Structure formats: C-alpha cells, structure tokens
Length: 277
Image (tube, rainbow, N blue to C red; front, top):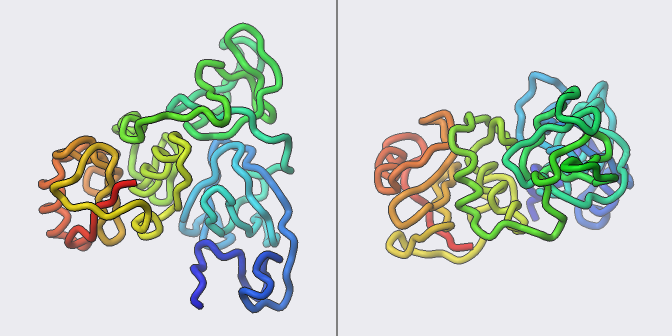
C-alpha cells in the first residue's frame, strides 16, 4: 500500500502512534495537541519560511505536533489531514473546545469591548473560536479579543448553499496553498465553501475529485464541481462556474464552456469529470 505523504504523519523514521502496524518507522510518538493562535498560518513543505506553502491553518484549528525542528513544528492538521511544518510562534497549547465559527467572510477582534480599541486580525470564515463572554454586540473570544457577535455562528449551525459561500470570495487574490479570505487557491475555495455548509472536505483537487457522484456536463447545476488535472471549480448554475484560478489571479466567475476551452488550451487539458456532492 502506497501512503499519501500529504496526509500521512511520518517523516525521517518518526511517525504518529496511529500508524503503528500501518507504516514502518523507527519510533512512534503520541502527537501533542496544539491550536493555531494567529489569523492564518502556513503549513509548509520544509522547516523554512521560504518553503512552499501547501496548506494553511486558520485561527482555532487544531494541529497535532510530532517533532520540533528549529523554529518550526512538524505535524498534522486534523481538519483536512494535511501534514507539514508550521512556525511554532503561530501555535499555542490546545484550549477549550470551540463554541462558534466565524460566519462572516472576515472579521476583526478588538482589544476591549469597544470597536474603537485596537483591532486584531482579520479572521477568516470558518475560523474556530471559543466565546467566553458577551457585552452588547460583542463576544469575547479566547486567545483573541472582542468579535462582533453577528459574525459568529454556533458550532453545528451551517450554511445551506455552498455556491453562495463561494461567491462571497469573489475578488480574493489567488494564493497557492491558501484557505483564508485574503487569498486562496482553487481547492481552498471549494473546501471553505463546503466547510461552511458542515461538509468535511479534503485539501487538494485530486483528493476532492472522488467525492460525491459522477454526472455529465448536461446535468451540471448549482453547487456541482468541475475537475481538471490539478484544478477544480464550482458551478453557480448550468452555464457559469466560480473558481480561484491563475488566469484571473483571483476568485472569478466565468462561463463554464468558455473555461473548458480556455483551460484545454493550457497545461490543465481536458475536463476530467463533473461531480455532485
């Protein structure tokens, strides 16, 4: 069995204890639970700030740490399973379970219970927070400050239209490995839209393609996914898609058939399939 290194907590002979009997390693360790303590933190391929960003942690998301290497910690993000290196300064010990998620596309927190005090953030949609107190329209968030309560949704209360969530990202810059509202890639957009609807979703386009059921081009409707090799888009209706892409270098809406022809002419080639999830 070939293990996907992107989602396998194993490197240089060290593995998570959950891999005992699954993958050979010199030592198996119990991961140390940590939490993202900044608005967004890169998960990098190597313990170097200039290394490729493969994924991101959002505020409040868990990170299971296996090893320390310099200023970085190697581990796995349980929300989508991705493994890599995160700067230690961006993490803090695991605190109480989250009570809410950020439901606005992005929001700030404030140092005190007043919008005139120092702002921190912004924090992106689907960040996880623990509310400790309320004062007027503001809610105190553990590890941060006071957030507009209307920008929060209780854990378990989700959106119902993933395409509508995706549309809220229109104009956000394209960012390789990004998942935050300030910049994200094609699969990051799909993942964020589905997470807001309470649907677990893998990180990369090839991991997302097996989801749901195959459909034909003629059957495409709102919320369906279109896949190419290394790319994914979400349908807004039978004729239009929304996707974060390197052509526009942003999240943009494009006619589906036009996108099919344009993408076929570059390295992504033909559509590999359509899926209903």
